[in-house]
Image (cartoon, rainbow, N blue to C red):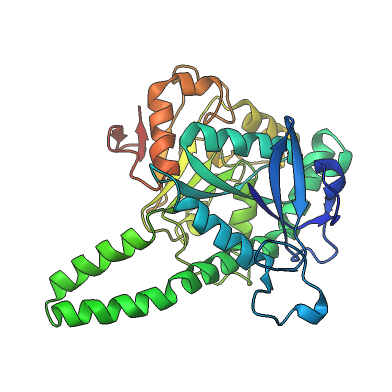
Length: 357
């Protein structure tokens, strides 16, 4: 799987511990790409240089202008699209932003489970979220600082993702518009129906975003920052799982999020990690969005309550492990992570503005 990161990297190193550092890159907005694969049950890492050829190998400065030279991000995009088109049944693409105190080996293990459990192609955005080696409250505060320092990097990821999607479709869309115009002229209904079907056949996968735990805190600060463009319509679904950010006032920034289909916020009142998160900062730490069943005031989000569901218990990551023994939980995430509408079989509680199982 592919990794996008603003961690410090070491080109040529092949293990998780040697290829990636615990600190942000010297310029925290600097992004590097890498590929991770299993070799004899261990992760093998290939950090890409800035420019590569058509096979992903480094290109010298003298050959940087040659026809098959490209930025690593373009190479990764082409590999992903080519890979996604080979799957039968089709797979969908997920950008996964992890949370607090996650070392990269654990992030890779979790992303691998996401791929296997939900038939996905996962791309990881990894920020330096492991507390710089400290523990407890100091680790939590350190990761909050690193999250804030990573805002610009995440924005660059989204900008680059949007640019690549546009590039991949630009020539085809222009050609398709001409074909559709020749076929249907002024018949707007037939024009739209044909164009939509042909475009979907060309790109038979959705692109979705999963934010877990403090990854939501990072995304929140991106939305309120001066660097965020704000009009990027990239994702079909955005799933905010166990959000470790304030419940208070969340509608002010959540309602600025744009997606094509659904914005889901998942809730578990018994989430032990979010309870611990609230205690780490003492009285200053307000109720966390992912475990508070009140003040759910967003006009655009769809809130899903997992509290009390069989096998969920106090889980902070109820999209994996034992909670998946609950078929309803598994079904929800299967649909949500694959760009589909996931709440149709659930019951809506109008008084609290949430869905439950």
